[in-house]
Image 1 (cartoon, rainbow, N blue to C red):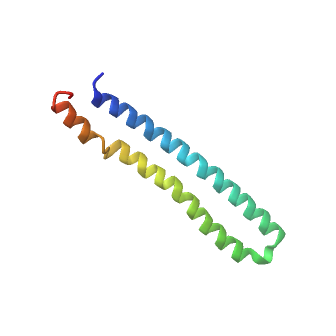
Image 2: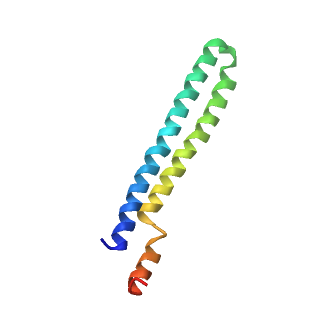
Length: 95
């Protein structure tokens, strides 16, 4: 197996792991945040506007983590920074 194939395999595997773990954590975090917000709304319905606004800001911050992981995985698949190095080494005869 040549080094270009190995880089491709490792990049695809890493992109899958990055997306899987990077989306699993925020999903649990968002579920816990919504659960806490609903419990707070049940206890203090008059503070619904403040709780809801804070909830949406928090959800946006949590979701940004999943988006960053998705961007990293897309870079690894489509714009891999290691391709140039591997092709240069392969062109030089593997030195």
